[in-house]
Amino acid sequence: MNGATSSTVLALIGVLLGTTGTLVGQHLATRAEARRDRQHRTDAERAERKEAILGFLAAAQQVELVLDRRSLGLPASEDPEDQKLHDLWLTKKAIELVCSHTASQAAHEYTTALHEHLRNSVSPERPAKRDCRHAFVESARAELGGGPSGILR
Image (cartoon, rainbow, N blue to C red):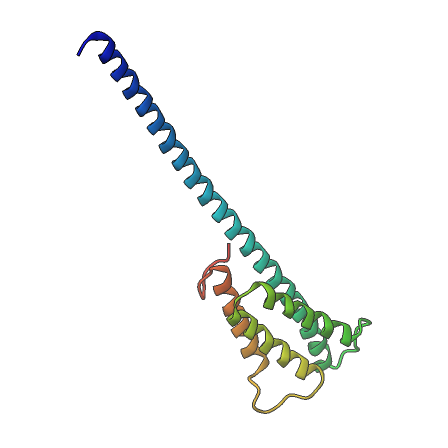
């Protein structure tokens, strides 16, 4: 091989190595970006589920407060019970939109139990209100990635 030919071959090898390095670098950067995007979407979905769960629990707590006041013989608050019940059913629908079927079903059971207690129409075959609440809290923990006694992030 003469000098011109070896210079050309070395230049082509350099171009080939440079192109290969660029392509590998772009591939790695694309994979890292895709991973970051998946993590961002996962975090956003979890935050949305957490917000729905906390909203539902807040509405359920308002109905529980009405039931507690009633059981203690205290006067009713100025907020209408129907509005609290409406808010509870509405937040239950948010659970249905963003959470799993298991969490949605547990929220439905808890909402139905609270509704029946508030309307004084509890059926004997219905699970106890606290059991429904416990089932919902456990499904919410699972939904958010916490174990039965795990700390929710």
